[in-house]
Length: 201
Image 1 (tube, helix red, strand yellow):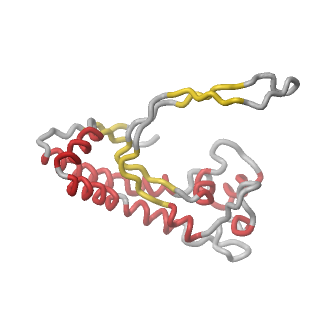
Image 2 (cartoon, one colour):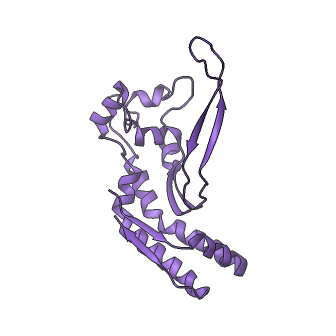
Image 3 (cartoon, rainbow, N blue to C red):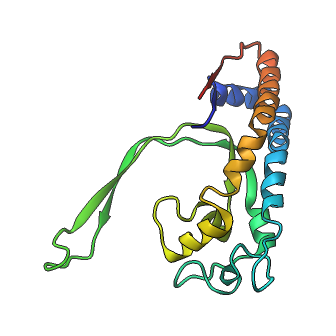
């Protein structure tokens, strides 16, 4: 179970602030990113070095030498994984949609010519913590939905998913939420608006 914080009308408020004072709007983005620095630091510290038989610093020694996805060049690089942790400010939401995919027709094994996939709507996120490096994302979440020999070994050595970013968020959540609310409250006062916040579990 995760705690949640909703700041009502924040997307429209920031749009109005941009119309009112573009320089201040840019500063707000910088301030919110700064509020997430402790999360990013803790996440980067958590992957600084892992002990393994090859001494290469990867969670599992093979992750440094062998690609994590067959047919692609995705290897563990500590510096790349650390750089992959970022704070995204103003992540746009999306409307619910259905996308039609055309399949290669095969009368025996795949008689359908197309299939559709539905995507749920997502809401605007004022602040989102991300891992942009592929190897880092795989390490953090591998084994969450299915178990393989690789994920079983990873679970044994480094524990179950999620392994890094969520732990850093949970550790710093209270302070970060407080800082972001203070930033937003200042924006609301500038635009003469009332801050409406809902905390949930």
